[in-house]
Image 1 (cartoon, helix red, strand yellow):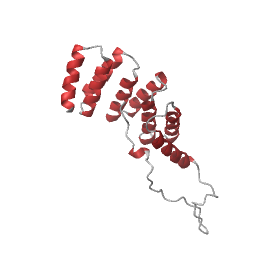
Image 2: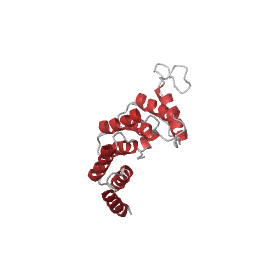
Image 3: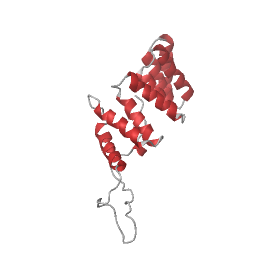
Image 4: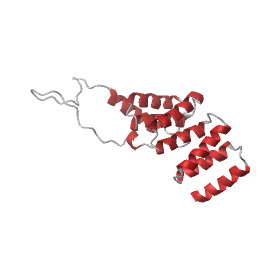
Length: 178
């Protein structure tokens, strides 16, 4: 099915060489098929036709992440955010990359909050709101008054071991193409 889509989209882009959406869809199909070099070329062709196109940049960022180019992926997502501040997938992807790959909880929290502030509410708002709340709680330092701390005579209070929860975490989130 993916190979047939690639063939059809390749034919389409040959007939319509100025079709930005044609190249983006071709790149997405190539990415799904694991043809990273071809997908990168398709996204770059779309960007040559329209620099800073949000779908092309976002998908290029996803591809860069597949290639373990974390800094380049973040640069792509941030470029989308700069030029298209209402483009929700870039905020989500930048947050996930910040959380999972860069281990920068503060930046992840900032990007998740920016995602939640978008109007209209993005599709994954409820899931991201729960995750944001958990990140905010994790960011707070424990206090002596915290009932979760256990004090044993002669020993310092210790934080409880992490709990598993049904709330999605960024560690099981995936960066999403647009």
